[in-house]
Length: 136
Length: 109
Image 1 (cartoon, rainbow over the protein chains, first blue to last red):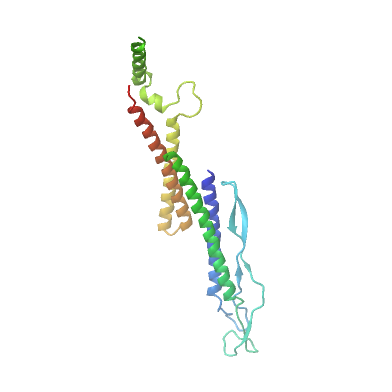
Image 2 (cartoon, chains in turn blue, green):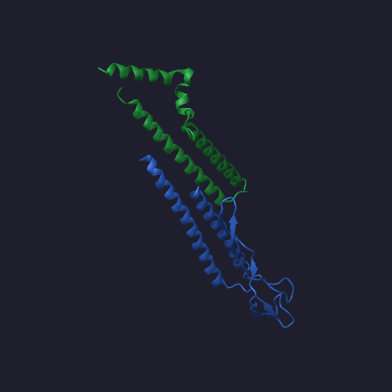
């Protein structure tokens, strides 16, 4: 039935956005993570990707979380000679996570999740209204 | 006066419907009549019941998975919502059939 198909597709969107939230929370939680060794690289920001997939049982395109890429931008450097991760010159590489960008992504994920929830809600209302024909 | 003849025919037909040898009431409702194409109402109802039961089992399994920490909340919510829809559809059809049957019962003979 097409109603259950659209619900399943919207549910795939929910799954994808939950996965995105997981990646964003990783980024936010690790925004202060530095290297374990002196002069090493700190936590590199991770970027979730989405791919359209053909679900054969549904015969429809659903969304899935694709490979999670890393952000190639430069690490900001801070001069802090006493830090355990500081290199010979006393510079510490900090994570390239920008809290403002992550918060924007978080809101985006939240809105996309709500959009998919609205699809499910609208489908349910359509089903209920259709059943109302039977009830007369 | 043709009325007694009509009444006699009606009684004869009623007797045929009620006669167990010809299949009785169960036959008229439960099975497809001879020469009819397509599934009978009984078959449709049976299929609907089976699909509702299947949806119920699926949502039960998902709920148990959630309690065990294996299933995701989204899967449980969609499975339960699907079951709810199936049950609502079945109940609506049942109510409709019961209403029709009651209308037949109230028909003045």
